[in-house]
Amino acid sequence: MTDLDYLALIAGMGLVTYLPRWIPIFFLARRKPPQILVEWLDLIPAAILSALLAPALFTSGAPRQFDVTSPELLTALPTFLVAIITRSLGGTVLAGMVFYWLIDKLV
Amino acid sequence: MKAAWPICLGYIPIGLALGVLAQKAGLTPLEIGMMSVFVFAGSAQFIAVSMLSSGIAAVSIILTTFVVNLRHLLMSSSLAVYFTGENRLKLTLFAYGITDESFAVNLARLREQSPDRPWDLNRSIALNQTANLVWIISTVAGGYGGQFIPEKAFGIDYALIAMFICLLIYQLRARIHIATALITGLFALILSLILPGNGYILPASVLGATIGLILKRRIEKEAA
Image (tube, rainbow over all chains, first blue to last red; front, side):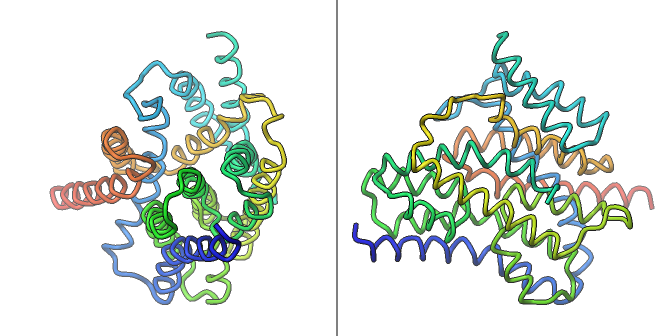
């Protein structure tokens, strides 16, 4: 692959990555979207975060396998508690790291 | 940029790991850094690097990148609600830095903004660019020899999962959000066992939020 080929590749990757990030915010922010869309978008963050987390906690390996014994899931239990009690992002991140490190040492 | 540190902490090990892989795939640190500038999307970059090392055609790599990053459509849409009537140049700059992580932190900050916890588009852009800078530096550093950094140091690999856990807790404001999260989590889990990579995020989220909305409307109708 020549330098020019590589530049073309990352320019293409950049374009197809940028457009989905740019189009909705650029056009939706012009005026208030319809009520049903607002209500749907209100549920999207909870949905995305749950979609990001569930496979990270309940699967392991590549290709992924269902797994309820991973250190990630074990660590998640006290980490959820810290998040619910403290509601502190920084505190939860630090606590999660310490729990993960301890569980890795102990289990 | 205090709000950005959990993201930065999470990006460092991932960025280093990507840099190491990219170097093994034959990319120079400059090429790695340029990819991080042009693309700034962790999972797509990992996939691109592994496709490059198996000699797959550029068109396939670009198409795969497109599919993997389509999920940002949803994140960009959710954020748009908070930026009605904002400067379009700023929105164009902000859009560049929308990632899973920056989306989640900015959204939580925008929702909970108050006089003593202000948050706006300028701060969101600053957060995105801070995370972007750390990402670029980490991936380049990885290309220079990130293999010397021990794995699993100080539980740093858990930083992003812990961050998502707390941000999810922030989002569970009513029973409908809890129901939506549970439904979506189940879909994501099932789809993640079938689909490769992170292709499960977009369909699971769309399906989960749509069912959540139907449920919500039905409950409201019964109550009325």
